[in-house]
Amino acid sequence: MSEIKTADVRALLFDMDGTLLDSTPAVNATWEYFAREYNLDLHEVLRTSHGVRTIDNMKNWCGITDPLELKESVDLFEGMIVKEAQELQAAGKDGLIALPNVLNLLNQLNASPVPVWAIVTSATNNYASSALPTAGIPNPPKLITADDVQKGKPHPEPYLAGAKVLDVDVKDCIVVEDAPSGVRSGVSSGAKVLATCTSHTREQLQGLGADWIVTDLSKVSFEVTNGRVQLKIDESP
Image (cartoon, rainbow, N blue to C red; front, side):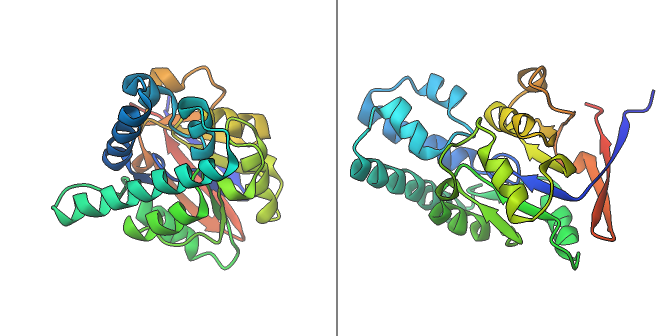
């Protein structure tokens, strides 16, 4: 049986960190600092925090509840990620880098006269606006960040907002995600979901409701015709 599947949708809604760009070294270095400051179990934090809004991680892990302190902590955390990434890149190491086939796919999508994609991230606008150019990723037609929603992933609100800002039915969208919280968000929104094994194993992503699971976006190709995206998805390991 062929492992090449096809799909036809109006739009693609991409998560950012772990899906379009790899921020792992910079994020890990930042969490190491916060783990020391707040006496956290670093292994458990790294295992469960990915794909969750920074403000929610600050509440859940650091016990911060004061609104002003929360904002300062979020700004510090996300600012440190970009700073760490830039220092790594200056040293000739990986900081924030586009994942396989991402630039090719997004440049193809941007060639469409009708907007057919958006980024839906748990990061703030400040972080996203710095991270995308640092990784060399083109600006999306629309961007939904943590600042635009009341409830973060795994709640469906982020992806519902992504479909709305593109003026499309969420059921006619594919959510592209790498984290369990994001997969759950996409599934509960009513969208189809394509999961990538770029930050979690295939086993960790199975059973969450994703329609397809691929190694990374090098397993995906598509054409945009008349404002619709026709995809070929290779689910082989």
